[in-house]
Length: 126
Image (cartoon, helix red, strand yellow):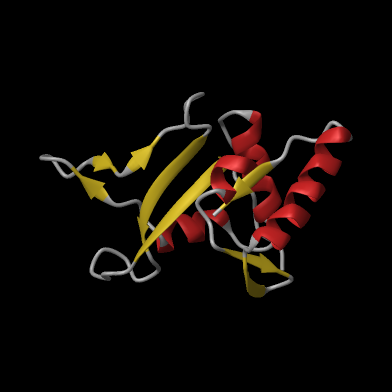
């Protein structure tokens, strides 16, 4: 399956994330299927916590798959591994969901440290 990638603007982290996902699923389709939740008096403000150096994560809330009439929501978070993992109790390995207990956290942090030692930038997603 091949998708036509549209030109991207944004920082290297954002465009890298999009390029990573694009071969698996068309990112534009995913955005259409999961629109951001709007709030505020004018209904145009997005439900988002932007990244900042204190939080070290960003968060957004989306309608899940069925659009604006669906009552299910999806919270998306990305950022520093320790900040994101601190808010998680499950993890997915090879398509299988597992409890994120202390033993699993040690494994994850060992893998993160290994990547960081090789100069890789590591982000977590939830």
